[in-house]
Length: 516
Image (cartoon, rainbow, N blue to C red; front, side, top):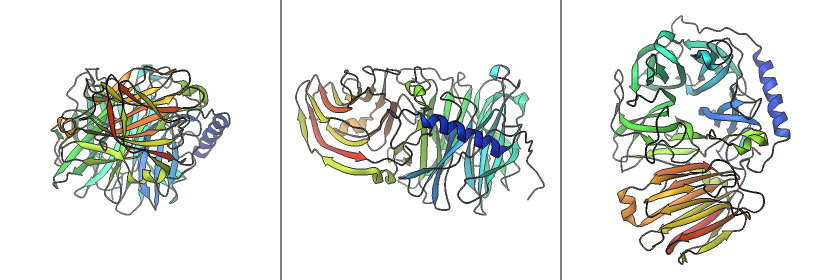
């Protein structure tokens, strides 16, 4: 153990700041409009949320922390919200975990992770944020990596320990944040996102033997695109394929990437590369950049390795594109369902809902096989608030140009459309008929092997104001907000300009996770 001590400069009473935040969230929750508030996704009781943080299983409970602005429904001074669960099905709200209270984090307790040491004790690493000019972002940002530890096994009270990685501001263009910590071959590693002095998006690597004193080792990765000036919420982990080969996955949310064809259509885009890494060296990518999620509203995912070996991930359903209708309802933002990351025999990553998600199911209706004629529309639910749909389309026996489901279909003619597009050979989520919010469409590709199989499996999760679509057991995913109009929210099977053969169709009614 070294004699290094983190730098701690307290400027406010932390418990008092937490109490203020709790009061403001409660005030927003008291008048919250639940028309689009999720039943089975994690969201704050009130206020704005963004990135998932501090994901872990500790002392028998799953913990999800998240970025929270408790004083309004727009992004603002970040705190850490907190929920926990014994089974990843029923969740309970926990006290707000961290608020700005130090000189180093006075303008925001930014994103970070949880890491369990060799002693079995948990540490939090997060970014302390302050405006360089003390007022706003016009003078740049000053960000440092911080350590905090829980005061109880329930993680309901946290003590900040101070700065463990200061920012070499002459080598950084403001952005220096979002630590991820793990252990390999007896050494602790920390990586985080950096905008270099030359405004290149990088991930830096630090090492430690005691989880307190950290030393710079190298630039782990620099994004090859010079337009990408920052890699937010970086991730880095090993994964083993079905043949037993270990690969390394580097994930990040790229700021500055330009739209190109179907790629990078969102404001910022979260994805990954698969490659190799040897401690002491840089990461060597062996694939192109691939999106974690092809939908309109996905960003800032974080993963962690569960004790059973699964690599689990939550993402933030980011609503940054205006207008954002839910901001008028006392809350804004939610997380995705938890997903398990696996490396398939096809050499790519798959992200399917964790097996615990099946515990949300209540009643199941099996509609079996169906045939739709040219341009036929067939109602399957008159009103769907929280449902999961499993659908298999026989592509080989279908002639439709588009075939799929109209979701959140209201009496005013609005809906969101999820369909297979035969001309694009892609799965599409299309919001052109939306009554409110941003419109446009997003697509997920199918590989040659998937197309050659002649079958398409879709698993859809429809919540009050969002849709998640898992394609062929998570080979692709699309997550998008959808704001239905007042009244019943129907679901309709649709076959456009041709016939459609449905091999299987099951509908599961889903229960609340307990956070409403």
